[in-house]
Length: 319
Image (cartoon, rainbow, N blue to C red):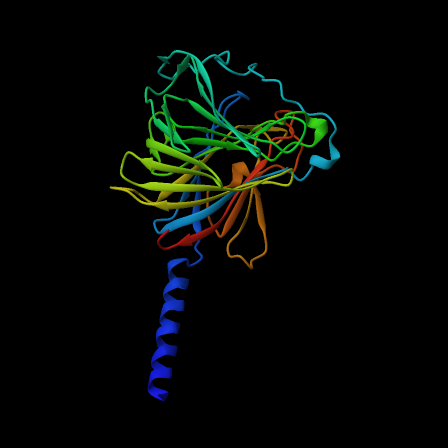
Protein backbone atom coordinates (compact mmCIF):
# COMPACT_ATOMS: atom_id res chain seq x y z
CA UNK A 1 0.00 0.00 0.00
CA UNK A 2 2.88 2.34 0.91
CA UNK A 3 4.46 1.48 -2.45
CA UNK A 4 1.24 2.45 -4.29
CA UNK A 5 1.06 5.78 -2.43
CA UNK A 6 4.68 6.56 -3.31
CA UNK A 7 4.06 5.61 -6.94
CA UNK A 8 0.94 7.83 -7.09
CA UNK A 9 2.84 10.73 -5.52
CA UNK A 10 5.69 10.30 -8.01
CA UNK A 11 3.22 10.19 -10.91
CA UNK A 12 1.46 13.36 -9.68
CA UNK A 13 4.79 15.17 -9.33
CA UNK A 14 5.77 14.11 -12.85
CA UNK A 15 2.48 15.39 -14.25
CA UNK A 16 2.80 18.71 -12.42
CA UNK A 17 6.41 19.08 -13.55
CA UNK A 18 5.42 18.31 -17.13
CA UNK A 19 2.62 20.90 -17.02
CA UNK A 20 4.97 23.51 -15.60
CA UNK A 21 7.57 22.75 -18.24
CA UNK A 22 4.97 23.08 -21.00
CA UNK A 23 4.31 26.67 -19.92
CA UNK A 24 7.73 27.76 -18.68
CA UNK A 25 8.31 31.52 -18.49
CA UNK A 26 10.66 32.80 -21.16
CA UNK A 27 12.54 35.85 -22.37
CA UNK A 28 12.13 37.42 -25.80
CA UNK A 29 14.96 39.07 -27.66
CA UNK A 30 14.06 42.57 -28.84
CA UNK A 31 16.12 44.11 -31.65
CA UNK A 32 15.81 47.52 -33.25
CA UNK A 33 15.65 47.99 -37.05
CA UNK A 34 14.42 51.61 -36.92
CA UNK A 35 15.60 54.08 -39.58
CA UNK A 36 15.49 57.87 -39.38
CA UNK A 37 12.73 59.86 -41.11
CA UNK A 38 11.30 63.38 -41.18
CA UNK A 39 7.84 62.05 -42.10
CA UNK A 40 5.35 61.80 -39.23
CA UNK A 41 3.11 59.46 -41.27
CA UNK A 42 5.71 56.78 -42.09
CA UNK A 43 6.21 53.60 -40.06
CA UNK A 44 9.98 53.89 -39.76
CA UNK A 45 10.14 51.98 -36.45
CA UNK A 46 10.58 48.20 -36.50
CA UNK A 47 11.21 46.44 -33.18
CA UNK A 48 11.56 42.69 -33.65
CA UNK A 49 10.55 40.12 -31.03
CA UNK A 50 12.31 36.77 -31.33
CA UNK A 51 12.09 33.57 -29.31
CA UNK A 52 12.46 30.20 -31.02
CA UNK A 53 10.50 28.30 -28.36
CA UNK A 54 8.00 31.01 -27.35
CA UNK A 55 4.48 29.74 -27.95
CA UNK A 56 2.35 32.03 -25.77
CA UNK A 57 2.36 35.72 -24.91
CA UNK A 58 0.12 38.66 -24.04
CA UNK A 59 -0.24 41.97 -25.89
CA UNK A 60 -1.77 45.00 -24.17
CA UNK A 61 -2.65 48.53 -25.26
CA UNK A 62 -2.26 50.86 -22.29
CA UNK A 63 -2.87 54.61 -21.89
CA UNK A 64 0.38 56.61 -21.96
CA UNK A 65 1.64 57.66 -18.53
CA UNK A 66 0.93 61.34 -19.20
CA UNK A 67 -2.68 60.88 -20.33
CA UNK A 68 -4.34 62.28 -17.17
CA UNK A 69 -2.43 65.55 -17.57
CA UNK A 70 -3.61 66.45 -21.10
CA UNK A 71 -6.94 67.81 -22.21
CA UNK A 72 -6.48 68.09 -25.99
CA UNK A 73 -5.76 65.21 -28.34
CA UNK A 74 -3.79 66.01 -31.50
CA UNK A 75 -4.91 63.56 -34.17
CA UNK A 76 -4.60 65.44 -37.48
CA UNK A 77 -2.21 63.83 -40.01
CA UNK A 78 1.05 65.65 -40.79
CA UNK A 79 2.51 65.03 -44.25
CA UNK A 80 4.81 68.05 -44.17
CA UNK A 81 7.99 65.94 -44.09
CA UNK A 82 6.71 63.23 -46.43
CA UNK A 83 6.99 62.47 -50.13
CA UNK A 84 3.40 61.17 -50.33
CA UNK A 85 -0.05 62.54 -49.50
CA UNK A 86 -1.57 59.65 -47.56
CA UNK A 87 -3.51 58.04 -50.42
CA UNK A 88 -0.77 55.41 -50.84
CA UNK A 89 2.90 55.03 -50.05
CA UNK A 90 4.96 55.54 -53.25
CA UNK A 91 6.89 52.28 -52.75
CA UNK A 92 3.77 50.11 -52.33
CA UNK A 93 2.21 47.92 -54.99
CA UNK A 94 -1.41 48.88 -55.59
CA UNK A 95 -4.23 46.41 -56.22
CA UNK A 96 -7.82 47.48 -56.92
CA UNK A 97 -10.94 46.07 -55.27
CA UNK A 98 -14.67 46.73 -55.10
CA UNK A 99 -15.25 48.81 -51.99
CA UNK A 100 -17.46 47.14 -49.40
CA UNK A 101 -18.57 47.28 -45.76
CA UNK A 102 -20.27 44.29 -44.10
CA UNK A 103 -21.54 43.93 -40.53
CA UNK A 104 -20.38 40.41 -39.68
CA UNK A 105 -21.75 40.31 -36.12
CA UNK A 106 -23.93 42.66 -34.08
CA UNK A 107 -24.52 41.32 -30.58
CA UNK A 108 -25.00 42.71 -27.08
CA UNK A 109 -21.24 43.09 -26.41
CA UNK A 110 -19.54 43.38 -29.80
CA UNK A 111 -20.03 44.62 -33.29
CA UNK A 112 -17.65 43.13 -35.85
CA UNK A 113 -17.33 44.82 -39.24
CA UNK A 114 -15.44 43.80 -42.39
CA UNK A 115 -14.09 46.49 -44.73
CA UNK A 116 -12.84 46.06 -48.29
CA UNK A 117 -10.87 49.10 -49.42
CA UNK A 118 -10.81 50.39 -53.01
CA UNK A 119 -7.06 49.68 -53.12
CA UNK A 120 -4.55 47.82 -50.97
CA UNK A 121 -0.87 46.90 -51.15
CA UNK A 122 -1.51 43.11 -51.01
CA UNK A 123 -3.60 41.08 -53.50
CA UNK A 124 -4.72 38.31 -51.10
CA UNK A 125 -8.43 37.72 -50.42
CA UNK A 126 -8.36 35.81 -47.13
CA UNK A 127 -11.39 33.61 -46.25
CA UNK A 128 -13.13 34.67 -43.01
CA UNK A 129 -15.66 32.65 -41.01
CA UNK A 130 -17.50 34.26 -38.09
CA UNK A 131 -19.82 32.12 -35.95
CA UNK A 132 -20.14 29.80 -38.95
CA UNK A 133 -20.86 32.51 -41.55
CA UNK A 134 -18.42 32.48 -44.48
CA UNK A 135 -17.05 35.55 -46.27
CA UNK A 136 -13.76 36.76 -47.75
CA UNK A 137 -11.79 39.63 -49.21
CA UNK A 138 -11.69 42.05 -46.27
CA UNK A 139 -8.70 44.34 -45.77
CA UNK A 140 -9.81 45.31 -42.26
CA UNK A 141 -11.80 43.57 -39.54
CA UNK A 142 -12.97 46.04 -36.90
CA UNK A 143 -14.15 45.16 -33.40
CA UNK A 144 -16.41 47.68 -31.64
CA UNK A 145 -17.14 47.31 -27.92
CA UNK A 146 -20.66 48.11 -26.76
CA UNK A 147 -20.08 49.60 -23.32
CA UNK A 148 -21.70 53.04 -23.51
CA UNK A 149 -23.90 55.27 -25.62
CA UNK A 150 -22.34 54.09 -28.88
CA UNK A 151 -20.04 51.26 -30.01
CA UNK A 152 -16.36 52.23 -29.82
CA UNK A 153 -13.69 50.63 -31.97
CA UNK A 154 -10.92 48.94 -29.96
CA UNK A 155 -9.36 46.44 -32.38
CA UNK A 156 -8.64 46.40 -36.08
CA UNK A 157 -6.80 43.58 -37.79
CA UNK A 158 -5.70 43.32 -41.42
CA UNK A 159 -6.16 39.84 -42.92
CA UNK A 160 -4.08 40.45 -46.05
CA UNK A 161 -0.81 41.31 -44.25
CA UNK A 162 -1.32 40.11 -40.67
CA UNK A 163 -1.23 43.50 -38.91
CA UNK A 164 -3.14 44.46 -35.75
CA UNK A 165 -3.94 47.74 -34.02
CA UNK A 166 -5.47 47.84 -30.55
CA UNK A 167 -6.39 50.64 -28.14
CA UNK A 168 -8.17 51.01 -24.81
CA UNK A 169 -11.57 52.62 -24.76
CA UNK A 170 -10.99 56.38 -24.76
CA UNK A 171 -11.75 58.71 -21.89
CA UNK A 172 -14.91 60.67 -22.84
CA UNK A 173 -12.95 63.88 -23.52
CA UNK A 174 -11.05 62.12 -26.32
CA UNK A 175 -14.04 61.13 -28.47
CA UNK A 176 -13.35 57.90 -30.36
CA UNK A 177 -9.64 57.85 -29.42
CA UNK A 178 -6.79 57.08 -31.80
CA UNK A 179 -4.49 54.21 -32.67
CA UNK A 180 -0.73 54.59 -32.74
CA UNK A 181 1.71 51.71 -33.09
CA UNK A 182 0.72 48.52 -34.91
CA UNK A 183 2.14 45.01 -34.77
CA UNK A 184 2.28 41.87 -36.86
CA UNK A 185 2.19 38.42 -35.25
CA UNK A 186 2.93 34.96 -36.63
CA UNK A 187 5.53 33.68 -39.12
CA UNK A 188 6.90 37.14 -39.94
CA UNK A 189 8.60 37.69 -43.28
CA UNK A 190 9.85 40.69 -45.23
CA UNK A 191 7.93 41.82 -48.32
CA UNK A 192 8.85 45.49 -48.49
CA UNK A 193 7.80 45.64 -44.84
CA UNK A 194 7.25 42.93 -42.19
CA UNK A 195 4.10 40.87 -42.77
CA UNK A 196 2.50 37.50 -42.01
CA UNK A 197 0.68 35.46 -44.67
CA UNK A 198 -2.70 34.30 -43.37
CA UNK A 199 -4.52 31.46 -45.12
CA UNK A 200 -7.83 31.75 -43.23
CA UNK A 201 -9.48 33.34 -40.21
CA UNK A 202 -12.25 31.99 -37.96
CA UNK A 203 -13.83 34.35 -35.44
CA UNK A 204 -15.88 33.21 -32.45
CA UNK A 205 -17.88 35.82 -30.54
CA UNK A 206 -18.78 33.85 -27.38
CA UNK A 207 -16.14 34.46 -26.05
CA UNK A 208 -14.44 36.72 -28.61
CA UNK A 209 -11.45 35.02 -30.25
CA UNK A 210 -9.64 34.97 -33.59
CA UNK A 211 -8.28 31.67 -34.90
CA UNK A 212 -5.68 32.18 -37.60
CA UNK A 213 -4.24 29.60 -39.97
CA UNK A 214 -1.07 30.74 -41.72
CA UNK A 215 0.09 29.82 -45.21
CA UNK A 216 3.07 27.87 -43.77
CA UNK A 217 0.70 25.61 -41.78
CA UNK A 218 1.17 27.39 -38.47
CA UNK A 219 -1.73 28.51 -36.32
CA UNK A 220 -2.54 31.16 -33.72
CA UNK A 221 -5.44 31.67 -31.36
CA UNK A 222 -5.96 35.26 -30.20
CA UNK A 223 -8.31 35.57 -27.22
CA UNK A 224 -9.71 39.02 -26.48
CA UNK A 225 -9.43 39.12 -22.67
CA UNK A 226 -10.34 42.72 -21.88
CA UNK A 227 -11.50 45.93 -23.53
CA UNK A 228 -11.80 48.83 -21.08
CA UNK A 229 -10.50 52.35 -20.46
CA UNK A 230 -7.61 50.76 -18.56
CA UNK A 231 -6.44 48.43 -21.33
CA UNK A 232 -7.21 46.22 -24.28
CA UNK A 233 -5.65 42.78 -23.81
CA UNK A 234 -5.00 39.93 -26.23
CA UNK A 235 -3.74 36.49 -25.16
CA UNK A 236 -1.96 34.73 -28.00
CA UNK A 237 -1.17 31.02 -28.37
CA UNK A 238 0.82 29.89 -31.41
CA UNK A 239 1.68 26.64 -33.12
CA UNK A 240 4.66 27.01 -35.50
CA UNK A 241 4.47 25.96 -39.13
CA UNK A 242 6.95 24.83 -41.75
CA UNK A 243 10.28 26.62 -41.84
CA UNK A 244 9.24 29.06 -39.12
CA UNK A 245 12.04 31.09 -37.61
CA UNK A 246 12.42 32.59 -34.15
CA UNK A 247 10.57 35.83 -34.96
CA UNK A 248 7.00 35.80 -33.66
CA UNK A 249 6.10 39.52 -33.73
CA UNK A 250 7.24 42.95 -34.93
CA UNK A 251 6.16 46.26 -33.42
CA UNK A 252 5.77 48.93 -36.10
CA UNK A 253 5.53 52.63 -35.29
CA UNK A 254 6.60 56.20 -36.11
CA UNK A 255 9.41 58.24 -34.55
CA UNK A 256 10.67 61.64 -35.70
CA UNK A 257 11.55 63.14 -32.29
CA UNK A 258 10.56 62.45 -28.65
CA UNK A 259 7.66 64.93 -28.93
CA UNK A 260 6.66 63.74 -32.42
CA UNK A 261 6.28 59.99 -32.20
CA UNK A 262 3.78 57.19 -31.72
CA UNK A 263 6.41 55.59 -29.47
CA UNK A 264 9.69 57.12 -28.30
CA UNK A 265 11.10 54.83 -25.61
CA UNK A 266 11.39 51.21 -24.55
CA UNK A 267 10.83 50.03 -20.96
CA UNK A 268 11.49 46.42 -19.98
CA UNK A 269 12.20 43.90 -17.24
CA UNK A 270 14.80 41.23 -17.88
CA UNK A 271 12.93 38.87 -15.52
CA UNK A 272 9.49 39.18 -13.91
CA UNK A 273 11.06 40.24 -10.59
CA UNK A 274 13.73 42.56 -12.02
CA UNK A 275 13.64 46.34 -11.76
CA UNK A 276 12.32 48.15 -14.82
CA UNK A 277 14.89 49.55 -17.23
CA UNK A 278 14.14 52.30 -19.73
CA UNK A 279 15.91 53.77 -22.77
CA UNK A 280 15.04 56.30 -25.48
CA UNK A 281 14.29 54.51 -28.75
CA UNK A 282 17.46 55.68 -30.58
CA UNK A 283 19.64 54.13 -27.85
CA UNK A 284 18.06 50.67 -28.07
CA UNK A 285 20.07 48.07 -30.00
CA UNK A 286 19.08 44.68 -28.57
CA UNK A 287 17.84 43.46 -25.21
CA UNK A 288 16.36 40.42 -23.46
CA UNK A 289 13.01 40.91 -21.76
CA UNK A 290 10.37 39.04 -19.78
CA UNK A 291 8.07 41.95 -20.62
CA UNK A 292 8.60 45.05 -22.75
CA UNK A 293 6.61 48.25 -23.19
CA UNK A 294 6.88 50.44 -26.27
CA UNK A 295 5.58 53.86 -25.31
CA UNK A 296 6.03 57.52 -24.43
CA UNK A 297 6.56 59.57 -21.29
CA UNK A 298 6.75 62.93 -23.12
CA UNK A 299 3.43 64.12 -24.63
CA UNK A 300 3.55 63.90 -28.40
CA UNK A 301 2.11 66.40 -30.83
CA UNK A 302 1.21 63.39 -33.00
CA UNK A 303 -1.63 61.06 -31.91
CA UNK A 304 -1.25 62.38 -28.36
CA UNK A 305 -3.63 59.89 -26.68
CA UNK A 306 -2.45 56.84 -28.66
CA UNK A 307 -1.63 53.91 -26.39
CA UNK A 308 1.60 52.27 -25.37
CA UNK A 309 1.90 48.63 -26.48
CA UNK A 310 3.24 46.05 -24.03
CA UNK A 311 4.28 42.46 -24.77
CA UNK A 312 4.73 40.01 -21.89
CA UNK A 313 3.77 36.68 -20.43
CA UNK A 314 6.20 34.91 -22.77
CA UNK A 315 6.01 31.16 -22.30
CA UNK A 316 7.45 28.11 -24.01
CA UNK A 317 5.73 24.79 -24.64
CA UNK A 318 2.68 23.56 -26.51
CA UNK A 319 -0.56 25.49 -26.77
